[in-house]
Amino acid sequence: SAAKLKVVLTVKLPEPVETRMRELFNTTLWYDLSQMPRDKLLQAAQDCDVLVTSINDRIDAEFFDAAPERLKMIANFGVGYDHIDVVKGAEKGIIITNTPGVLTEDTAEMTMGLILAVSRRFVEGAEIVQRGEFSAWSPTFLLGRRVYGKRLGIIGMGRIGQALARRARAFGMSVHYHNRKPVSARISDELGATYWDDLDQMLSRMDVISINAPGGSSTYHMLNAERLAKLQPHALLVNTARGQIVDEQALAAMLREKRIAGVGLDVYEREPAINPELIGLPNAILLPHMASSTIEARTDMGDRVILNVKTFQDGHRPPDRVIPAML
Ligand code: 8YV
Image (cartoon, rainbow, N blue to C red; front, side):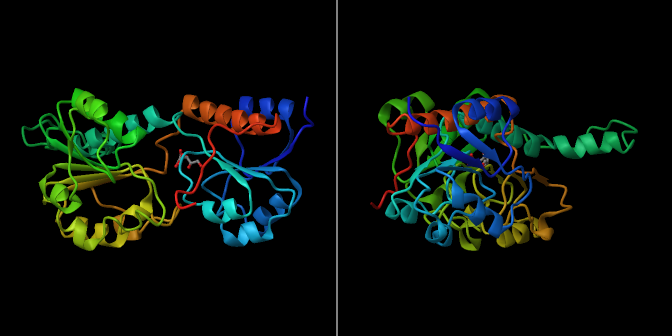
């Protein structure tokens, strides 16, 4: 069999995943749970065949320019790869892979959970109990809004958007979506989803908006101040995709001015920093990028990374190779 590749991990992976990697490859761990300093990242890439990376690392043009001949593959632990300059990577002939499919249901679950939590004020209620302030019930206490019968507009109808659509239907929502193009007739029939070519029109007609599109330059500030202004004052927005899709400053202003009723956010423009104007608002549920944080998804993501690296080590084309659209 082929010689073992030298694999460097820039982030700690679940124990069973690391154990398996140590068996299959010549694996080094850079045990750094927090953001790794830039020079450390560039250093990590200096002496390996494969770099296993995550959203914490910025794999940009500078990185690729500094990368040695030896580096042949970047295996991303995650489905989104907007932190990787895939065009530059392709120019340098470096194979880039991601982990699609294995965190779809988990992310859709969390998104549906956020829709319910924001609509029905779970967090405000839980905090009242924790503070010992549940003193009496009243008919007008913590009134939320019913999810059943509401219109959900999904921005980005890929795997995760579709998984969310199925859940939303089960909760009695009508499903609408905006996407670069309509989904196939088969999927559209199954989901009973209405396609909106015009995002502004969809925004102005929905009760809940969920962002499930990829990040990167094609969706950067897709929801800018002007677009956000199309939302109705009773509308809710949830984002479990990428923070850069929304102008966070404009969103905070909308919330403070009550031009939107609530938000559920798992992702931010400058993670892990969060715009301070979003903090402390009762109608904003803010989560720390945890939509795919399940034991099952993390294990499956690790298995997917292993499959990609192993396939490459065996001299074949890795299944989850990311190819820049423009090449
Ligand atoms: C991860 C994600 O937590 O897969 C993605 O794109 O955002 C999350 O699942 C993280 O990005 C891992 O790198």
